[in-house]
Image (cartoon, rainbow, N blue to C red; front, side, top):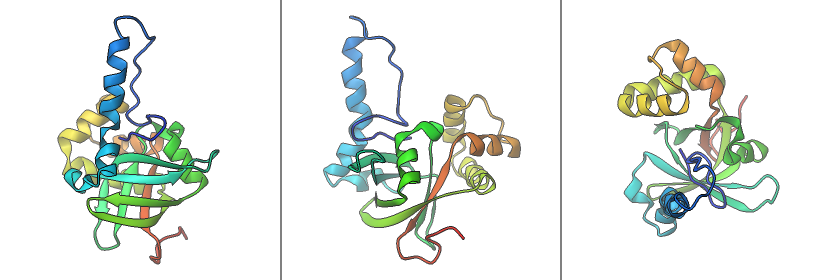
Length: 181
């Protein structure tokens, strides 16, 4: 899940047409969904622990820095690599941006580091989704149900999720596994 500077992406919520009744909800919802970015800007990202990270990437058209807060699917402590997934698929701006320019900066907890975003294969992503489902079963069921529909937690479900939602490894710059082989 994410919220971005400029445009909300993975937290995107369709509020429908603005009506007198719905107009009052739009602004508070937008502020609420952007709250994680403001937490990081206030240097309080450590409050979110290591379940979330701030991804700083470049806009593919503007070249300007963009910020997105994402949930961490998995953190490989040995390599320092963080796995993230695009809940809204290929059309999420941050997803398109990091495919255009994979050089990113990451803030997680109190850590900050440059990284390279590497897209995982469907099989690699399915393994990561399966691990996430084991570590966080309730969250997995809620997110999968919201984003894809009811899933039962089978290998076929993990493959389906991996095919519809791109997953990336954020590998710290300078590591030998920074670039795909």
